[in-house]
Image 1: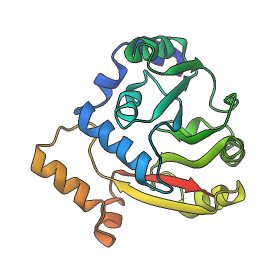
Image 2: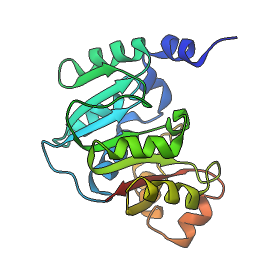
Image 3: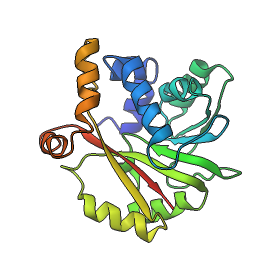
Image 4: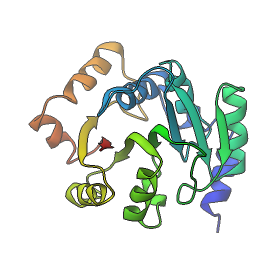
Amino acid sequence: MTSKADQYARQADGWTEDAYADVGAYLAHRAELIEVLGPPLHAGETVLDLACGDGGLGDALLARGLRYRGVDATREMVDSARARLDGRADIGLGDLNEYEPTEPVAATTVFRAIYYARDRAAFFAHVAGFTEKKLVFDLNPRQYGVEGIRAELRAAGFASIELRPFFVPQTVRLPGPLLAGAKALERSGPLARLALRARFTYLVAASR
């Protein structure tokens, strides 16, 4: 049986391009929300991206004037991220459950990987110890109970928790007007929550 590590190692070359139908639109919108959801980030502040894969998010965050540090548990992903970002960011090997930066970071992100936390509540507390402004991650509300996640975040010291629907699709490239409509729908309140019953995810920003 092929392990997840073996799977990620084989897919490291071109991971981002294979994962997203419209890499630019998807990751630019993710980066925008990382910057503005919860306490705003400012140019020059550092975002630590745990389980960073091949560092695709790094380009979008660097374009916004932020510093990017990526960490992944798969050596091949680390090598691919270093090649992609070509010295513009610090990329290291590490497991999200144990990794701790040498100095605090403004924000920590975890995308498509929160389920790799062996003990989610302990992971939130671990991240809180080195994150100055906010933790940002994606959450499938059909897989995880939102109130349970809120309780774990508060127990870790994150008193303020904001959720934003994320409706830019991963596997479909939308023309401009539909892309703008998807982003507008994210702010539609009850209609957005109804859509989340069927598909899509939240972005969660947890801060003190």
